[in-house]
Image (cartoon, rainbow, N blue to C red; front, side, top):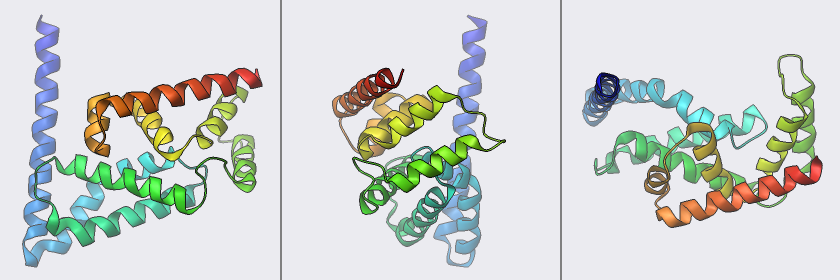
Length: 197
């Protein structure tokens, strides 16, 4: 019982700090004389989360970096429209998710990943600093061949362990649609990996 209370207390403190930080960021962004300072705070707070959300969906750093820059441009252009109905983090996550899907669709990644990108993945696995085994290599290639929305839902759930209802909220989908996307992605991954081994 004491352990549960401690965990709950830690989670509440973390949530309070996050909300306080977002509140300070928004106050600075809304004031004309501190707008740039507030935006820099926002970038410092969210740049890693945005980058890694994007990076899990692309083989090369440059694509994730492009998406990250596009997300910050969209945030800058639309921050005045943010009403605070949802948490700032959720709003940013939704922009990032949409930008990932748009980027994938614009580069025709949707159903079959370009051969040169697969070759880059092969290169990445052969570099000394990257310690991936054959199963991980097949897993990454399989992820890249999923349709964009399935890939995004799967990576959010698999890597970040994001609850289905939170994914649904962030992507503005029903929980049922999110679960279906995850299930279809998981089945495809099992099937494709099964063919390789």
